[in-house]
Image 1 (tube, rainbow over the protein chains, first blue to last red):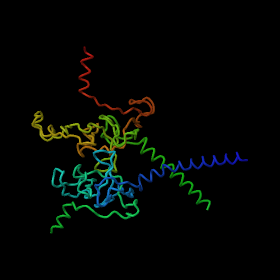
Image 2 (image 1 turned 90 degrees about the vertical axis):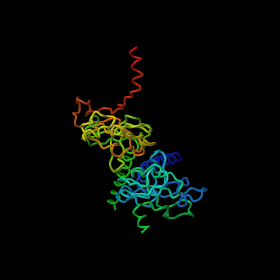
Image 3 (image 1 turned 30 degrees about the vertical axis):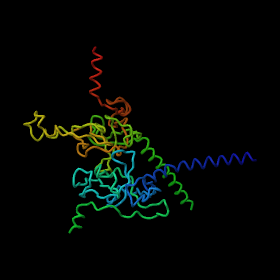
Image 4 (image 1 turned 90 degrees about the horizontal axis):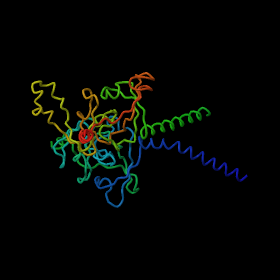
Length: 177
Length: 198
């Protein structure tokens, strides 16, 4: 009698674990194509993200629709694979999309840069950051997702505010006039 | 009610099956069609199917001479299939054929030709890719070096469905053949050849 109960228990556990394994690929695909979380490390997005070096921020990474037209817009915060080392993931703010002309900053060899088709100009909110001024415009194919909201230290639960500078020549001209 | 339950079950199976196949294709192994003339002697222009190993995605362990599948930097919706002809740090002569059509006079005056003197050093984390059919290929000569992060996999074999099932000129089983690394290191050969001669 008891052995029968054990047998059914094992059978139940076996069946349930098998059932759960079949849902693992579904979860992987959702994390790859719809949304995921990301931990922000480093100081390049200060003061927007990681305002103090004590605790890291966790952000909600939205991946659905970033490949569509206007899927990534200026002032979005994006996570992308570094063009100089594909194993590294950088978090920066988009400062220009395809067709924009950018007024660059110090390490960049030229004063202005025209963004090619399907490329982005990304910069950290902090001036001390390794960004497009070092490695140039990045292809949108390297983008993993847009960070839309800070989720982890619950005290900092909010949408990611605007930050950084205006880099597009056209907007800067309008500002001067 | 019965019907709803049935459709729910079917949907659940389709979802799980589809996702499993997708994970398999994006992380382990893919068998897919290629089109276009850019890799012509190696891969046919149409109806050629390639076996892609995803172990090499993000350029993990790729070498010069490997055939790779990558996202096109200027249009990430498209995938391109090219051969790596330069790794980080290599110095590349961009395209000596550029000027041949423009002026026939200076054809043999190599030193003065601009296109023979245009070199580029492949930056860190990038590679230089070209098609095997240089005359009909849109590659690094146009969109500059390719970030390794855009590499999706390495082509290891191909099937040509233009060929007969057995006994075709490219091999048996629908022209099955391995796509291998065809890079020849000149420096290495020079050192090996004299030792054989003596």
